[in-house]
Image 1 (cartoon, rainbow, N blue to C red):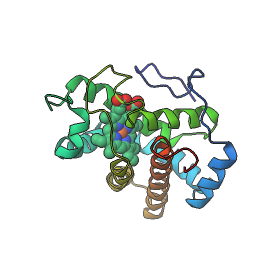
Image 2 (spheres, protein in one colour; image 1 turned 135 degrees about the horizontal axis):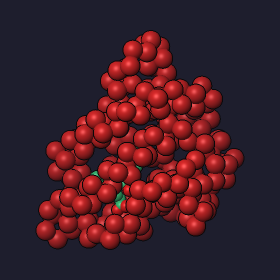
Image 3 (cartoon, rainbow, N blue to C red; image 1 turned 45 degrees about the vertical axis):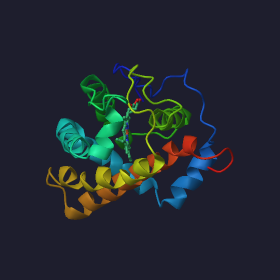
Image 4 (cartoon, rainbow, N blue to C red; image 1 turned 120 degrees about the vertical axis):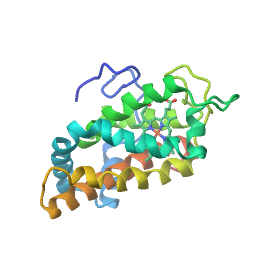
Length: 197
Ligand code: HEM
């Protein structure tokens, strides 16, 4: 797994706090999601399919968030409620890298620590700090979990674009959807009371 030169992108950064989740905790969570080796392989295949479509995918997702006022609010100044373009752009770069890293994740300790950090960045314990902005300070957990649906559904046409058999597209899409939900669940940790996650 590479460390990225994108500002604020910290997968592989050994100075991140360690996740309290063990590899065994992750393994049982993956089992619960029916996320197995075939999904890991399908995601690897999806990497090659989406690699040159990242900007088009981001256009769809940003189009949705940008046209949905209650979501755009979290990219907007807390006082003036004006969207913060520099913040939207900075997060977009990390989001693009995240798409590729979701397809080639190796689920090690560094990956778990990065998931914990992304969770904090949606929660009041870490939001806005990476970019030094004064946007709305906290994204409610219900939206973080709910956004897993649009982020999953909208991926299918991109996975189907390179002429793969429909069974392969289905397998890549199922794996992608599970991988997004897996991460959204991991990101909900800061929202749970100590001992409840
Ligand atoms: C950050 C994905 C839910 C708003 C990020 C990042 C990713 C991501 C990959 C980049 C990490 C970073 O900036 O360091 C997702 C996924 C979601 C989800 C896959 C659901 C499954 C939401 C929701 C909102 C949101 C519901 C509300 C609009 C943001 C914001 C940041 C961010 C504002 C930057 C946070 C900061 O560091 O200040 N998200 N996100 N996300 N996301 Fe999400």
